[in-house]
Figure 1 (cartoon, rainbow, N blue to C red):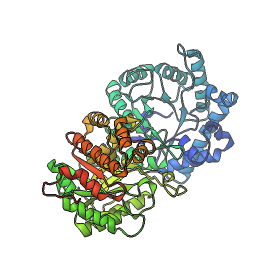
Figure 2 (figure 1 turned 60 degrees about the horizontal axis):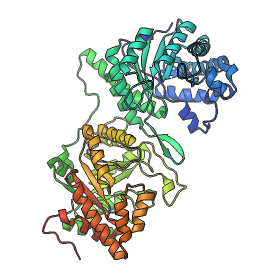
Figure 3 (figure 1 turned 120 degrees about the vertical axis):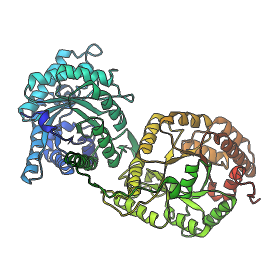
Figure 4 (figure 1 turned 90 degrees about the vertical axis):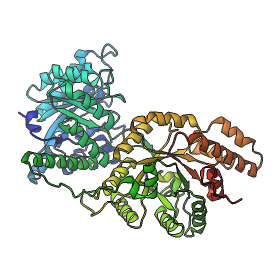
Length: 624
């Protein structure tokens, strides 16, 4: 009989990731019954299991999350509970056997049991007895097929968790049972139970291990298990989603990077978890990164037990912030920073952009921010323009760098090159999908998102490549991220911003600010993880420009500003009104932020200079 004590002997254990996410990525539509694929396409399920084993997973969950009579009935398969569950265990066992034959390791098969998908009494018409019978039917099939243990997961309420656990005790009395609840944004179960209460109840009811899975992402799961740990002596599991999904090109994409999930694994183990893995959105790449994190933890533990001091990785920490770049020095001194955005040209002639940078440098602007193919447009590379601006004008630049067009290897190569030629400030962003640009059929990469990119840059800043190998020296980047105080889903924006700060972000540039109230609310919300904020300022050039910002770019635009632009009856009047609005906004945000970035609309660097003139050195003169 498998015991959890055997599985968790002296070290943390890694489970697999999502099955549905990988199947969906391979073209299996979500209206299919994924559990039924155990019968109709077993080789596909086997291939996914083997990918997870190759990535380093030590526990495979059978493809049976929804294989109970209630969920299967929606597909006309209620009579195939036993067949589908048995096939699920058999396929996972086959993958483990292949692993053994290759002498590549050992793994366990967990029979996966998800919620029934119906409301239980007193809120629904399904009785507790019916629920227990349905769970018992599924678990009995999993046990009879040879599962090593049972994973009861994503339980939304404690009454359903109780019925599932009791069913497991009746149907598979010799198998260890892990029960995992799912939690909301506040790390509470969906029935309102606190994680402490859930841990105490599951311990009292006889679970062999407990934990949290699915939920809104790593942060909430980490908070929940931290609360659970003092309430139980049982092993704890943590298997979160890869964040909240984001709609990109008509598909829901989970954007928590493998690097961020690896960081989560380290934090979860430090918080007392003995088992980690992933749920929705996690892939073999995420599990592979988590495997590396656990190896490092295991190595550290063995060194500690032996009483040996060993340098596990040849890290080279970055220089202090103030020594990395001019921007870093200004941040360290608490100076108010002025940036101007210059967009790269569509061709090879960047003389106009260089002259604009020269003008702005002469006025005392601290640095030029160069975006990376904004709106997914094809332009000169931002890296090329940055180095030419620095060489010809002497003003420092901030390189805007996206994840859209490059895989992890290309990103690393680019950043090593950028550091070697003297580019030391990076704005790390996920990037607009190609469909927004002028080559809508171009493919996107998105190996990582902005959070993963910050993690990657932070690693390079410590002298390590993506594989944790020494690169000999720190890249010494000053790390910037984007922030959107007017995001429609502000809670999601705040969570992601916190992840960026935890990953290593050192300052942030906001989307253009026209509504001071939104900026104030955002700043209040990030008090617990505040970094210096640079407010974006956009001088409007016309009513049409304002309408584009509001409707196409979804920038919050107060009606008062729309009215002011509408009342400007000539192009020159509109330009002047836009400048006044930008100047007023600059003065309004100045007490709240650590700097401003002024855009130069349509290459009008004189407009940017006029907007920013009031806070530049007094001896600066703006050309008329």
